[in-house]
Amino acid sequence: MYLTGTQIDGKIEVKLTLLSYIDENVHIIYSPALDLYGYGNDESEARDSFAVTLDEYLAFTTLQDLFTADLNRLGWHVDPESHRLVMPLWTDLIAQNEHLNEVVTDRPFKKFDQQLRLLIFA
Image (cartoon, rainbow, N blue to C red; front, side):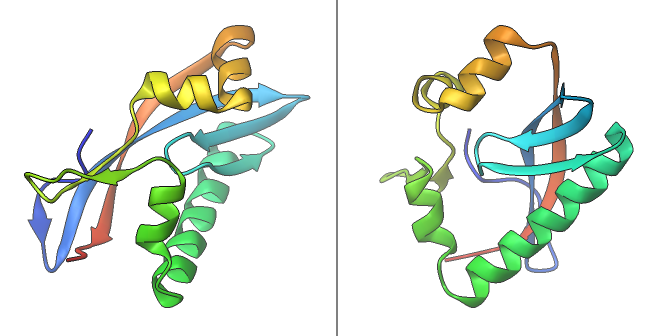
């Protein structure tokens, strides 16, 4: 999946795939592509926690000029022809991430997409 979407006010809207599952009575929201988590007593709290985690991640990595380097670390790359950031394939994420592999093979989970607005990076 490419990191592209509708451009609005210097930002780009993108879809990020998230998983929702329960681990020891704690509700978890997990982004495999960013390796970020949120948690809570119910799914609503977990979503709120994930939103805070994502905001902190984006603020820190952009402030420290680490955003692109961290995406590369997570398996993202720039398409040489389109010059767009490309998320890792779902199959690659499962193969390389033991925790994700466990979630999708051994636990009940829900998969859903969340729309995000990110600053446009050159």
